[in-house]
Image (cartoon, rainbow, N blue to C red; front, side):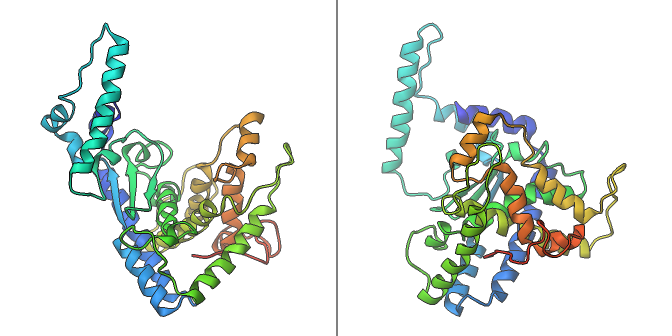
Length: 332
């Protein structure tokens, strides 16, 4: 019962301040990306205009749909479902029929790109971009813990939740998302010259990530399989950092974390990297490197940071060092 669980979770853990703060971060990232699109040299004017229009049309749904707060609506939603505590198989069968009938009902209703049921799993700790809706969903589960706290310094919130938001925004413009227009319809809307340049720039990322190799399993990363996620990581982190810098430029300096000799800008990068700080056993490590569409966690940290000049500046990495290579790859 994900809808009921989602409603209970949202009612207990949602926070108005969190939703407002997260929305502001999203809008700042979106504004920064828009600024970047206006100055990218490899886009022809038609492709630039269409990409700008798509970005402006991107919708974000943060927290939960309002329908989850409506008891009458939820009761009506489940009114045809019969559950018998003492008859498990019958209840299971009824639930299967209920789900099937709910799906069939949609064929007789007006089409809606943004259906509230899709955004009901508020307990998830993952953000989502929907290509066919050109929409992003950030559930309540992402607005707490290591991801976000409205009362923490902005450099931590931008580094963690902001990174996730930026990642999802750029998914609309990666090698998959770029095939969908501003309305979420799949079509060929790029001119050939811009598309050729786009492909050329993605080849740099494919080669770069293809050079990652795990010392334990000796497996090499498939840069083509992971391209969409790598583009989202690189572009998302870059645009989020620019958004944080612009925010910091117009606000009084924030306090540093006590006991740590790091600047706010350095803590931004650390906050983003901590999202991927996990202890893995050999089996999980092997599966990550074997290929899942996402790069292994260590690559999701090292890859983007090596490609962003501001990281090297903030940590004083020597030119040509592992974290400040001479050749950097980027698209957005």
